[in-house]
Image (cartoon, rainbow, N blue to C red; front, side, top):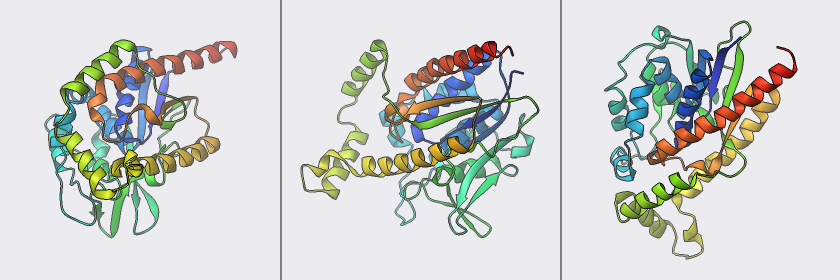
Length: 299
């Protein structure tokens, strides 16, 4: 009764919280028997199913703003301005090439075929091809071409693929939503550490890039409060929130955890340590609530 069918939602850097959720589930005696993921959820799910989550966690926790910026391989194309090859080349250093069907547990990644206006679910075939397609954020990461399909981020149609995860008899359906309501609050110790890091990194390339986009896209001081990335990320988050609400009304997981939208912007991967801790903290509450309800029902 402690087998889990785990669904990991899309939401950019907030998806790092998935790592903490997985760790907390395992520490409480739950066995993850299948995973479905969309976008960043597909990345974390694939790496977990590959057995390399510890390596991935270590790498993520060593990223700062400057390192994140250096992972962005910019390209001059109308289809997107980041190729994504540098990130995946780093992941390939600890996750070997393999097919999805060879993973230790059933896994699937959701992408969207923009040419056919429909979802495409990867449940077999090349693992890296599947997760690269699932994270292809429109206008940011270049799309993936496969046969007659043009594949983009799975969050466009299915940010929380509850209906795609493989189910087993008597398993527990757990869904992690990265576009939740509410405010994100940090422990004082973590907040102080973040502020110290931000001060140290002032003037580095990422902040310069943001200032450049501010100046380029608007000459109005009022409009500059929302730069190109803020507008794009906010639009995507709003779309995914609406879709997730519909998905959760239609499908009722046994456990649901919501990560607030303001926990991190799409590319703030330098917040890995605090997001993992947040994932563990919220997962602990989710599990306690579920187990308390089970006791009340005599199960």
